[in-house]
Length: 194
Figure 1 (spheres, one colour):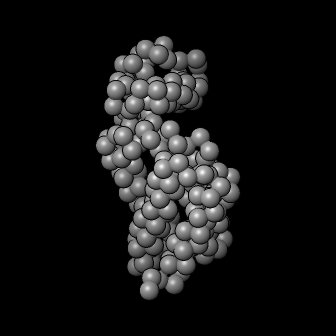
Figure 2: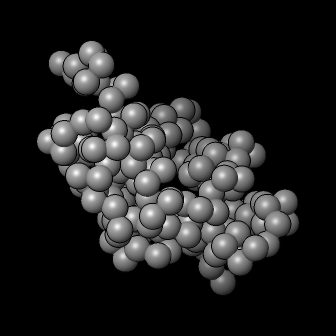
């Protein structure tokens, strides 16, 4: 059972993530150690590792949320592509961090872009989400392909959005194009490329 006291549970996890995020944004991911985070949070390194087994997960801490959103979307009645389409449009409309359209996301993108370890972990997370999606889709011969195409396509849309935001393009213009690229992704998923 997870601990819920002042030194355990969700409150401690949230505190660690907040402290780590601030240190990473201020000093860069590679310059900050887990010991630095633990000290700033008033905790031990062991406690930090109990909540976040990998340093990269202190910064890229939305994997569980992403998987939960995908699973919840696909458990609704309807066509899988339509359900994923609806989910990603909702994320975009809300400016959710997983869409790449959160107005506060530029420092996050910059930190990821500057760290090979974070970029590698992001690829691992994408592969894990692809596996989760495959498990959740109806068991057909094409389910693994749909999962792979969706994850690759959505990742491409978000990375392009991030690159444009890092280049200084205004969020409003990028958001409009983000939606256009999402529509292109779902057109390709429904009808194929060509």
